[in-house]
Length: 133
Image (cartoon, rainbow, N blue to C red):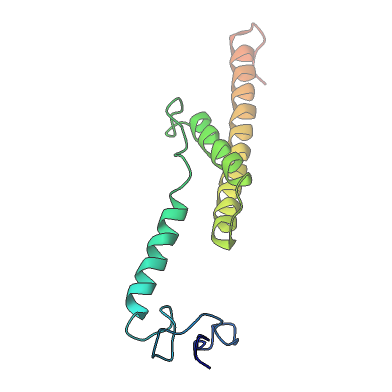
């Protein structure tokens, strides 16, 4: 069997035999070899961090998130950006949380708009010559 590479003896997390070639004179590949496991995990983790940081930051410099309208704008832009990404369940959960918050803000702002209209009508009636009943 000279010239043929020995396959890794590890079983993957999916229950399948690893298909990588084993390190020369070893039973495991570089991914599954016990001596390399820690460094492999660290490299994988770093790769995941880099993948998460690939997108440009959300530009909200023209918005004030401390106001209702500004916050609605921030959430709207975030939802729009998230909707264009390929995402996993964690991102989908973040979208759901943002959508719930924006819905709550929109409901509150509608209530505030209606209350302001009622207050304006009350002020107009108060200032008119007609007495209150």
